[in-house]
Image 1 (cartoon, helix red, strand yellow):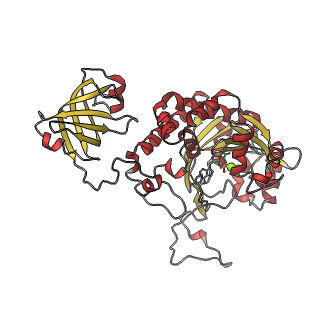
Image 2: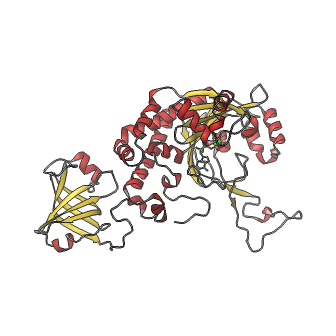
Image 3: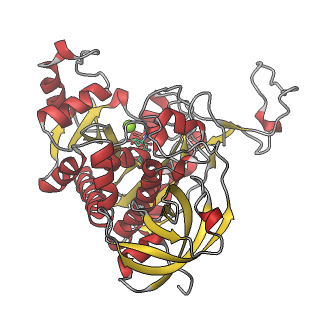
Length: 462
Ligand code: 4AD
Ligand code: MG
């Protein structure tokens, strides 16, 4: 590009004696009377660049009083830096001051708590940690598109507003234009959505899977990558009301092939982070979690563990006295159990498959045992569930029976059932929670700190 370089490009591509121009925000300033050092950052990399300005500058009086957060453009020459920590610095020939930040700028140079930073979500990307998280988000997005493009998957866009509840958990946000002061009611007292914008009850999607299956049974291999919404009242460091999900869906894939896909996908993302975001990983390793790099390298080192739910339960039962919620066959596996399996029992990512059908969704393919479905979850150390997926029920009658059993009205899913009527095929897919992946690759502790503007119970500011 023919514009001035970013600080990242200057540090990567330029050498001593090159004339350069950089623009950014002042981190700190040290003033030595006839000269001063400005630490300048522009958010493009972990590093900042040091500017040396001296009294030969016409506006030196102003430059030497620059405050943290002020915005400037600097022209000068790259020179070897005598100080430790950086190879090059800029000897300034001119400094243009765009704007001087007042002294109440909330991000003064010191460590701020993540709780405090959440209160200033409009400024926090300028902090080192959240800046690094944002770069990681961008890089992981690229890795995801790259992986699927390389493997013949088409990117499809599924709707955000929907009339179906994919997970059947009733955790959906209603979308309505009804007048909240005068809600029309049906004879039975329920809200009359026939008078609503869509002529029926509509919600924000919890998953693009059902529409993803439509695309996969046409284009063979597809994936979605978009926002999803859950109105679950979970105030945990792993749940958001709005999060991004990646959902591949592949025709002719059985559960085994689905597990292979999930494992290759996760490994690709981790390898991408280690290759392209080494500086960010070093930063997180030093500041946030000293085991991060080792944990990421460990993901690539060996095949994932794979155990059936039934085997997993017997492994967990041996440790039941140490769990807050003891497990038994039929119970849902919770975060403490997921972490115990992936951290203590196997010490690597672990895929659990063949769950009891009672704790899983209506669309999962039933096993011949009559008790379990072809579901799989990928569990990783520190996080627990990173991926949830399954082979889909492709038999029309079996699916119809299961829907009726669960009280789901087949009329609402006629188009979904049609996929089993016309050229039905085995097919599988999964959903990976993007923010959970980001927790994993950054070592950050709270999911609210890996999405720019977190939405959770009681909070939708910014
Ligand atoms: O296991 P889940 O609910 O699976 C589905 O939605 C399937 N329809 C996916 C599919 O087969 N296409 O969600 C998938 C993943 C979870 O493993 C988790 O990583 C993430 O989405 N997730 C959340 N992330 C943040 N906040 C929440 N409230 C989440 N709920 C699920
Ligand atoms: Mg799940």
